[in-house]
Each structure stands twice: as structure tokens, then as C-alpha cells.
Length: 215
Image 1 (cartoon, rainbow, N blue to C red):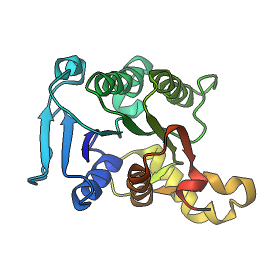
Image 2: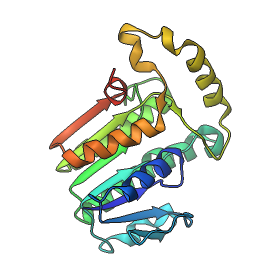
Image 3: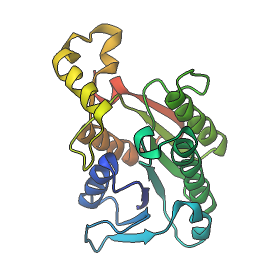
Image 4: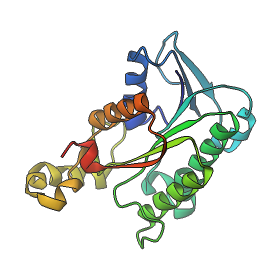
């Protein structure tokens, strides 16, 4: 299998890329990013390009399966407009590129509670992305909806830090239907993504956080 991944420099993307490189099922991995990633492997091909120019990559690679770990924060984006550009426009542009290049299977990290009708801007954006992906009709599209991600980041996200602290002390109190809101370890999430990539379930599939955590 030849895989293409975008967002491999982030928390989830770097974890996923490491697992893909360790899995003999994937013979070649193409990483699309704005700047080089400090990983060397004979199986890894790095394509460095600005995300505004993704259309330039049409007909430049062939892959069987795509993984999207692209995303930013409101703090880094500094405005709703910039956030939407990264988390919506760039994501769907990448998906469209994959579709044009013959990719049949698409896997993406979304968010628990994603809903295009949500009043929350973040969840609404994620929901609109999901709606756009569904309309593209990949042979299979698997959407993972984790809760807040736990893992070691290169950057400090104050809001997530507070959220993870609260999850650490009170996560065990989330029981019954609320268990699905427990924090998601990024290693668990990316392991689950690789497992689903092996099955390549046909059609549209949403994997909620309780399934990711095997609750």
C-alpha cells in the first residue's frame, strides 16, 4: 500500500507517521508539508509545498490511501477566518487533490461533537468538513472523532493543558454515556487509525471516541 499523509509535523500526525513507517503493510509513504520533517527513511518521500498551492500536486503522485491530520488552534490562527482556512479549506483541498490523484480511501481526524449545525464554531467547522468529505464519495472515508488529545506537544496549548489536567483528576468520574468524553491518548488514536486502514471498510464510517478507546 502507498499512503499519503498531511499534517505529519503535529502531535497526531507525527505519531501516525511513525506507525506507518514501522508497518510493512505500507511500502511507501508520501508526506505533504510546508517544511521538511526531521525523519529519514527509504520508505518516506517528502513533498514540501505551501498549502495554498496544493493544486500544483495534481497528477504528481499515486497513492492508495490518504491520512489527514491537519489542523490548527484559534491561538495560532488568531482569527476565525484563518482557523477556517486551515481546518476547513486546506483539509478539503487536500481531499480534492487525493480524489483527483486516484486515492480510493481517506482517513481523517475530526472531533467529538462535530456537527455543521453546531453553535460552537470549532465543532461547526469540523462538521462542515465532514459534510464536504461525504459529498466527495471516496470508496471509503473513515472519520475519527476523538475527545481532547493527550500527548507530548512541541507547543504549549494552555486551554488543552487545563482540559487535560481536569481529565486526569476527574476523567474517571465520566461513566455511562459520558465515558465517550474521556481524553484520547494520541498513540491509541493513531494505532486505531492504522488498524482501520488495514480493513479499508467500504463507504462512510464515523469512529466515535468510545470506539477509539474500546469503551
